[in-house]
Image 1 (cartoon, rainbow, N blue to C red):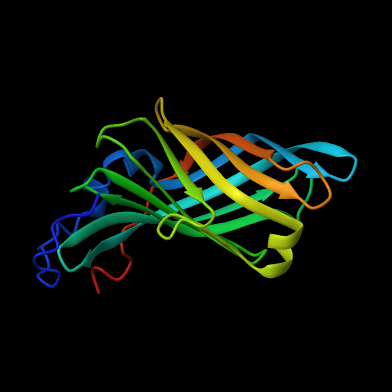
Image 2: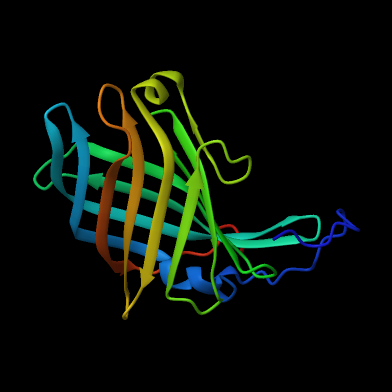
Length: 209
C-alpha cells in the first residue's frame, strides 16, 4: 500500500522513542540466543539435516522518513554455528522495518554469499505472528543474486514467519525455494529456531552526547 503522493517532501515529526513505536516488531528488540536450530539444505546426494546454535541481535534505529513516509525499525545481525564448532556457517545482517500508516513490515537481508533480498508483509500493530515474502523478479520485494550463485542455486522465493512470545521468546520458520543446478527445481531449504532474550535492546548510544 502506498500513501497519497500529493506531497512527497513534507516530513512528519516522529516520536524519537523507537522502542515505543515498533508495532509487531516490539517483541524482537534485544539480544537473543537459540540452541534448537534446524536446517535442511540440498547436497549432491540428497538433503542434509543440520543442527545449529544462533545469536540474533536487534537494536533500535532512530525513526526514518522518506518525505511523508515514516518508518520505525531494528538493525539486526544474525550468526549461526554448528554445535561444538567455531566457524560461522550462516551470517546475515539487515533491517526490520515497521510502517504504522500502512501496517507494513519489511525485512532486508544481506548474506556474504553475494546475495541480498527484501521481503514484506502486513500485520496488525499487536500481531504476534506474521509472514514476510520476497520473490525473484519483483521490483519491490525481490531477491538479487550474484552470477555464480544464481546459476548454481537460483532462488525463486524466500519466506519467513515470525511467532512472538510467550514471554521473552520468539521463533521463526523460513523457506528458501532453490533450483539447484542439475537437480529437480523447487527444493525447499528450511530453517527454524526458537530464541530467548539474553540482553535488553540499546537505544541510540549517541542520543545523550
